Image (tube, rainbow, N blue to C red):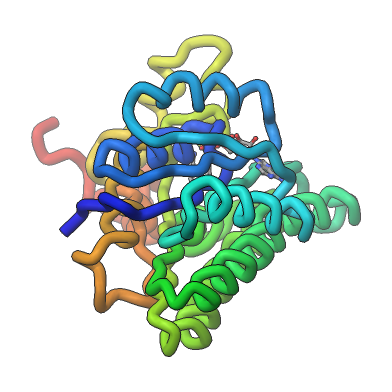
Length: 275
Ligand SMILES: NC(=O)c1ccc[n+]([C@@H]2O[C@H](COP(=O)([O-])OP(=O)(O)OC[C@H]3O[C@@H](n4cnc5c(N)ncnc54)[C@H](O)[C@@H]3O)[C@@H](O)[C@H]2O)c1
């Protein structure tokens, strides 16, 4: 049921950690995969790395622009003759500042990269699927901390990721009659340079441990944790799932005011019983 033989999938932000892990998994399951990213150098390296696994190609494009989104979808259809799936994953963290200090351009840049790119790429992919009468699957990237919860100082990111979930639900309604399913994934902290600031510098172990300590499952998420869910949602096994937003966060968002690590203000009901 998660076999993609003969199918063609576009993965955006594919030079990055979660995008490349997902592209790899799609290829391992038999899909032909087009990798799109604005960073040509990193994209080439990932295409080279994954090339041995299966049918992989890359297209350099800025997906926040209409021409870039169109180019990525067109490259997929030209290369593999069809598009069956889209993982709309490109994104950035953006500036961390309180709302009253956040620059107009800083806000616009995050919205364009994380939300406008989803709208544009989804639109062009859906048009190609409808034109070819292909039942398709789209998975949009949301966020647990940004799309479900809120992040202090992260107004632009939070707005973009809440928007991603809204866009997913609206698109699921509009595209359902064409046989196209649209879902979102909402990862918690994933061990990437975007998810763990400073991961590429300093003490990696303690940066990761500090996050893991605050997650009920006491582990930090890995790119492959997200990839597995994306591939499932794009597969035939998920034939009746559309308009859903799935948390992939080890229960991270359950750490609310009353049961989070709060220095004894309330009992730590979720603390590790083995200690
Ligand atoms: N890492 C986490 O903890 C986490 C948690 C929740 C959600 N996410 C989301 O997952 C996605 C991937 O994150 P990651 O951790 O793999 O980060 P990453 O930085 O490794 O990957 C992001 C990729 O997107 C690309 N990109 C940025 N702007 C682009 C544009 N305009 N056009 C095309 N490509 C563009 C980058 O070049 C990069 O390769 C992001 O949308 C992020 O918000 C990440």
